[in-house]
Length: 239
Image (cartoon, rainbow, N blue to C red; front, side, top):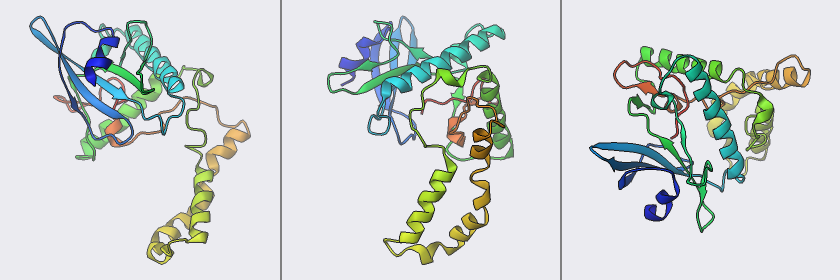
């Protein structure tokens, strides 16, 4: 499989191997190794889950816009090689951000950040602090990226009142007769129902500016430096 995909990307060296990588559940992710002279270089190859992302080309337009913007910002801050601290795309030999194979699957490739590590759970208070700093750093780097330059690839995915309605509907229908087993959880949600529309109401009233945000800031999306334990320059992880 890889022998028919990898040659489409603008890479040098000899392909050595590709192995499953990470614990991500959405896309298929592989760590690829290439031999270039005396150096082994690594890259991340992903097959986008088009069952979830029905417009993969829009996803990739977003990825290219965000990564290009962050790299430009980092270079402006004096980073000589941003590819070592933030994900960056490897383009195809035709200059595209993705390759579409004969079966219709969309593939993308990133530089692998050797110094970075991700963890599925918070290890300690210091790690939690660095996760927060990483998210803040990402938000700072995209603070001047116009929201209108990005596609909404999953409409309604982050609309909290919609999720609350779906929860209430499911609880009311109780098709599987499971509601007695979640009384504590249902009460927890009920006590906080008024919080669900806070942000959407402010947006609708033009009292909250529309900005680019991460929107999936779970712990394993925040990259940590292996040696220092500090957050990397940007919080995006390609898992």
